[in-house]
Structures are given as structure tokens and as C-alpha cells.
Image (cartoon, rainbow, N blue to C red; front, side):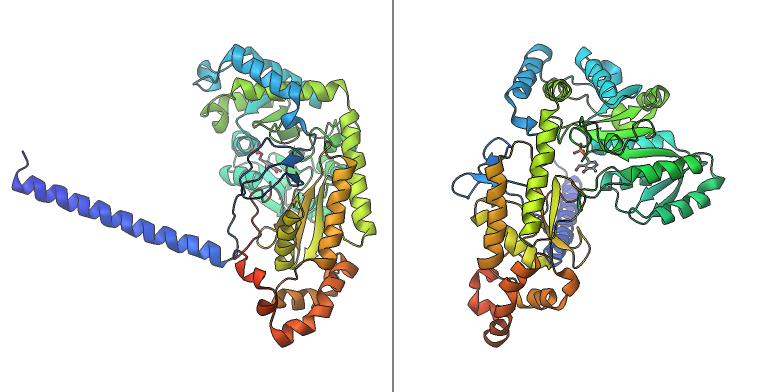
Length: 474
Ligand code: PLP
């Protein structure tokens, strides 16, 4: 039985909890509205099939060609990879209900670590639930306030977060700018250890770190080199070892972090590979390793089979390179500017944000799934559509994608008036020039006299940003 006093106290607590919740809802709604207004809202399209070059997407009729997954080698739906996952699930169960150091280490975890170290020709490797975790767990465990880390300004968010967590002195050099890296290394001479941190391949631009120059500077200034190889492992270099193989620097890079969630089967998981003593230290100190569950056996089984396939036969790596070349050269011949080095990330540079988002929507209508990226994911005025090539795209798939760009560029919907003026006024943005200019210019006059909205009512229905970028920087 409640006494009057207890009842009043309980009611008052309930009222306070209720108003705290109402206050929270207000704050959250405001935040969400801010994101929508800023045009940075990320929507997610729902795939109703397996991941692969051809997928089905909710509310889109028929199959579509997928050009925006990190499924570089197409292994995430490879029958042998799936079979290996099923077998591991059967033999080792759904999961460990434990972290590695308590009772979460199975023979398959040790086997995969050894295989990864062999693949990269390093002394040892350690698995993490993701590469995000590998990056979050490395710097803090390795570097102290006596040390320094020197990081490329466009490094992946997980490297930035990992560096934030450590107590080392932090230096940031301009993207790929070796003179600036040298200046920062000179400044960092006073510290005990210096670690240069870079992505091997940068996911927004498809450009590749100049590892030769980085390693040269590192050796001149007594620094170690760390490379995140998420967008390189499995397919860059003659046998898919990554950026270090591509640039002949296999023995110069001290530490590599990479993912199992892209080319190596695409499920999830990450790892660090490098000197044995470092890997041992990470097993003792690295927080995402110590305090998060072991990788599920099915995931380990899939990644392990993906590595076997890759090490047995590297034809798939060559096929990837040939298809990338086909897409890039055909697009360039059609007048588009494709950023980056010869990487399967092929950013089709458009400049204007609305143009990128309209064109991505238009491509979907033509049966091609690609993503438009604009500010703040990429710098203002550098909006693009990111196309990602996979070894399992056929030549016909690639040609269809190119054709869709060409058709879209000549007959598709225009961007907003503002966007058009932006685009027209920026000759430096002359991306896909003659096509896009042909697309925009003759209509500019009509836009200004009749108003773009009346003429292309579809633009009203665009979300405040249809530049939804679920894998921004990913
Ligand atoms: N590093 C880079 C360069 C990435 O692109 C990504 C993923 O998008 C990660 C780290 C994180 O990898 P994971 O998905 O395994 O957490």
C-alpha cells in the first residue's frame, strides 16, 4: 500500500522522468532537423538479395547492377566462401560468448591470424571485430605522451578517432603533401617515437599514398610507417598484397591494419599485422581487442577461404585491374573526368552537388546503383558519383554502366538552377565537360525565364539531399 507521501514522491519522480524524456525528444528532433536542413541526411536503400554485381533493392522493380559496394573481388557471394562459412558455423558454433583472452580463442582464429601474417609477409597478426576497432585500438596501446604521430589530413575517420584516443603528440600533414610531411617530421624530432599514419588508398578520391616517398622520409627522420590497407588488401599489387606490394615497399611499412569486410569475403572483421612484439602488446593492451567479443566462426571461415582463393590463384586480381582500366578509359573517352589513380574506386567528378545527386537517381532508373557524394563528405564544389568496380562485373556490365552515364549525361534531368549556374560558371569543374555542358547549357536560359521547378517537377520530390552516402569515407 502506498502512503500519501510515497505516492506523491513517486508521481513527482515520474513527472520529472517524463519531462526529461520530452526534453530529450525536443533536442533530438532539433538535431535531426539540422541534419536534414544541412542536406547531409543519409538514407539507406534496402537490398533484398545477396550482395553482388546484380542485386534487388526494395521499391525498385527488377534487378539492378551494383556499382557501389566494396566487394572488390566479388568474394562475398562466392559459393566456396559461403560453404566455408557454413562449415565453420556447423563445426565451431554461432559464437564464443566471450572475448579472446577469457575463453574466446578457437583454433580457427589462430589459423586465420597466421594466414594473414603469411599473406602480408609479416611476423604476426591479431584479429579485431572490425578494422575500425583495429584503428581505435592501435595508437593508444602503442604510443605514449613521449611519442608523436604524423597523420595525413584525409585519413579515414577510424584512424582519426584512434589517434584522438592516444596521448602522443599529434601532427597533421596536408593530403599527400610530402614537403608538409617532411616539415612535420622535423618538428616531431624531439619525441621518442614518430609514427607516420596514412591510408594506402583513399576511398573518396581513389588516390594512392606515395609510399616510396613516405618511407624515404620516414627512414630519413627515424619514423615508423603505419598504413591502413582497407581499400587495397586483396587487389592492389601483382598478387593483391596491397599498396606496399604495388609500390615495391613490402619491407618498409612497419604496421598494416586492414579489413575482412571488403575484398576478403566482405563479412566483417579487421586486423593488425606487423612485428611480433607489437602484436603481443596489442593482445595485452588494446581495448577493442580485450573488451569485445571474438569474431564469429562463420565470419572467420569465410575470410579464411577468401584468402585461400586469393593465394591459390591471382587471376582474379588481374581481372579486377583489367575491368577497372576498361571503365576508366571508356568514361574518359566519353568526356568524363575520373579522379584518382588506377584504382577500382572511380570517382566521376561532377562538381555540383545537385547534379551528382540527380544523376545518381537517374542512374538508378537506368538500372545502375551508384552513389552521389557531396559536401561535407567531400570538399565543396567537388561533388561526384563514386563508381566501384568489382572483379565479378562482366565487361557488358561495365559497358552498360558507361552507357548509362553517357545517356544520363545527354538526356537526363538537369540539376537546380543554382546548381546549373554553379556548374556553368566553373570552368575548372569541367567534369564530363562536353556531355554535362551540353546537358546544362542550352537549358539555362529556359530555367531563368520559366523557372526550373515548373519545368522539372521531379526536382521537388528530391529529398533535401539525395546525396545519401552510407559509406562516406568507407
Ligand atoms: N579504414 C578505412 C580506410 C575504411 O575505408 C574503413 C571502412 O569503411 C575502415 C577503416 C573500417 O573498416 P571496418 O568496416 O572493417 O570497420
